Image 1 (tube, rainbow, N blue to C red):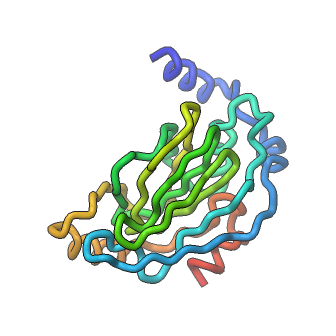
Image 2 (cartoon, rainbow, N blue to C red):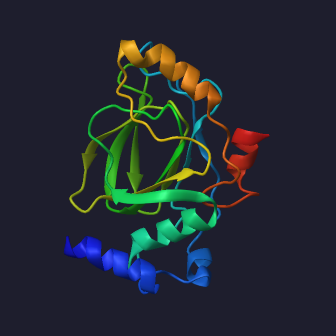
Length: 199
């Protein structure tokens, strides 16, 4: 409760929020790592867009509030409705929106793509994962200090699906209608994601 109140006050007062210069200087140019996942009949994944991971793309170790750094960075690049938490420990995906996950603290093993055809990937502070609509994700293990900042592009609608056979057909239709984001949540309108996902 106190942390939530403090965060609200810092948001409105601007205190604790990194400057635009500090935000920009925290970003490192990194090449995107791409991962494709097939539909396994329960986890639809995305037939056209890969999971994209930037390793060590944000210098957050020295930031007073590394989560605020990710929030500001994503917001400046058109990815909004940010939240701070972890990653759910059960398989799930979003059929109505893409999602970005910035690792602010700690590390975790995350399974992307579902239990049957997925891949376990280690993420640590400074990494950014851009999860296309339909792509399954699930935290397997994490350090106690693990903290994630998530956000979404302007177009799209948040939902949470759990990989059941009953929701699969409607989810596939929904995933096909999710528009590509207008910018890379880390590098902006000229970032690699624009070429990988949009062009």
